[in-house]
Length: 459
Image 1 (spheres, rainbow, N blue to C red):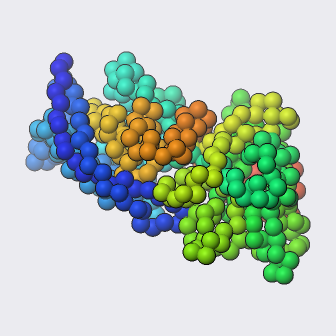
Image 2 (cartoon, rainbow, N blue to C red; image 1 turned 180 degrees about the vertical axis):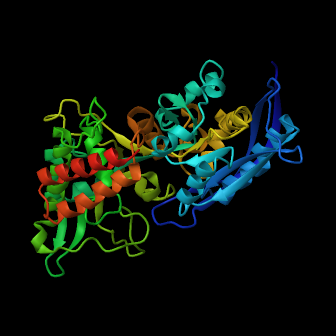
Image 3 (cartoon, rainbow, N blue to C red; image 1 turned 90 degrees about the horizontal axis):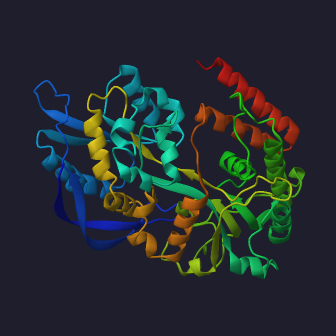
């Protein structure tokens, strides 16, 4: 087997994003990228009726820059290597993804490569091809370069595709606002410190009965009832979603402690529910960045979210922001560990595809070290390949910090049965919890019962 290289000159846009930002700032960057193309043994492909072969790839909501790069760089290189094969990118949307993807599997026909979210390995795993013969370490050693995000692209321990990026949930904190509020000990390191922090740093305008400064905003939930926030806390305690026999584990000490903590944080921030305190007013940009030209702050001191909700990379405010993993509660739960809960988009190969080996060859090219870097440069996410975290990833201190935390503490939102329904169950219960309609004990019992019933009824 020999190798040949195609030198391609491409112009890409570096997209820097922030919360509620609809059109990312673009900075033109001219680079020369070498796309490595490995010559392979003859690959059997499934032709269309006219004897042509079209490899079809279904992508969801990628930027025009990403699509242009794929169509102008990766696909031509692939078609040059496999001269009897064409590549077609089909663009879909996360707004109606379920109808489209479920349709592919129910019809047992569709694109050869499909875009999935991190939790969908369990949802569609039985319908996905075992790609170990094409992407396993013994045939493609480069698979060793993928970080924790690779777990989202597996089902029953077998590789089903490759992860594009990782989007972890970090704890961002404004050090200047913390110090101004008299909190000079750094980010809270356990449950007791977080609750104390919420009481001391949160501020309520007594006239308007509304928050004007909030110690911690989890995700974008003003109510502080958010299922991703709960799951992050649960995982940080060493909690497991399932017991050894495979049944749900929401009646565990970790689940009860996570639920109690969310209620404690809510009450420390807002006071008792009957006080009817209004949440922070909606602002422009990131909730921990400056609100407008007057210099008025939105009022959040810390934020639990991905980099998409943080200030734009060009903002000078980053000099005052710390980035941490959530540390759990080591004093009460010895298995606590720092965690960044990561959501990872990935590309999967369906079992129905008649071009599995060909699909693997396209994935290898689109997920080379250089290509995974370029793909994420066009979106502003952290590359799934650890060795692809160079270039734009090293142009700012905070991106380097995020990449290091993701590689060290990343836990994927994967391996979950009926994930969409479980998140809805947790969210519904948490909303009742913060209104004090349910106690923490009643809340975890309700989640345990409803999720157990759901799984028993699921074929």
